[in-house]
Image 1 (cartoon, rainbow, N blue to C red):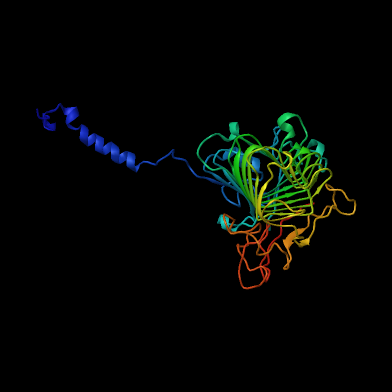
Image 2 (cartoon, one colour):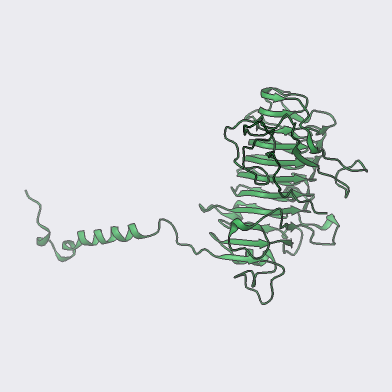
Length: 427
């Protein structure tokens, strides 16, 4: 039996192969995913009116206006200034992140390229001080929020970069007691070039990471945050956190983890510096689960304080400590190439003349390393960031011996020193 020639088929089937070919061509030329517009919205308090967010000269005056307009695949550029979330009460007054939306601060108000911004030179502040100025009792519970039911599950990257997040006060019940600076639950935003300054909470003074959260941080600073219970800087609860170029100074917790506490999940930290942090248990870090171990690499933990337990606290009685390598840890620690030597900071943190953190005379220090620091040119080069906290390329020849090697800690020392902007502390 032979197949009937196409010309002997009825008219519809005679043209069917041609139709299939045409459909295949149209499918091949079509975009792989949903067609989304990509808009850029500008925010600048000094832009002249009228404003519609279409340029620096017509920028929105508030970030909340831009957030209400922007959607997936859009960008928001925010110039220096102080921005407060809109809302009818402390619970609703928060900057709520959206699916696939990228928000960038650190602009001066003239840039045409994102590469021109400088987040350290152009402080762009997201403030929770929405009520009586200087009175934390009526501040936002969370300055920034990211939740699964708000951010959705679309396959677009959500980004927040270039901001100082300050003066949140999560002193309420349940979730309103978590993450004064920022609360993230069940989402995976990319966060970088952020400073968390003087936020408060019951848990996670600066940042609370809830179950299902998977996020990466790069170039992040935690200054003077406080938790009534655990996690002065960060409370990680069932989260997968990767943190590089992190700086923790002057953070405190009433119970565990002055700088950070890991409850469950996985926390990996590379080129981080903890100094001047305090808690009852674990002035720098507290680690609770039996598995997996937190990972520390190219880290410096020095000058932290714990009233009961050491600055690195393992609640499993030392049976599952942090897996540390190529680090300076005060008091010593099991691991590979661990040093118990003064890192020789340019200026160590100090609570000031009153001896208490959280007051106006706090000094978070200058945690760069002096030229003879044992942390210079002593780190590993395996899976490490290629720039430091302030953007200096790694590695540098910090000790001037003719060979560039990676440093420990958040800063890469350059010899001779480059002129860089240090992280800003607002009063």
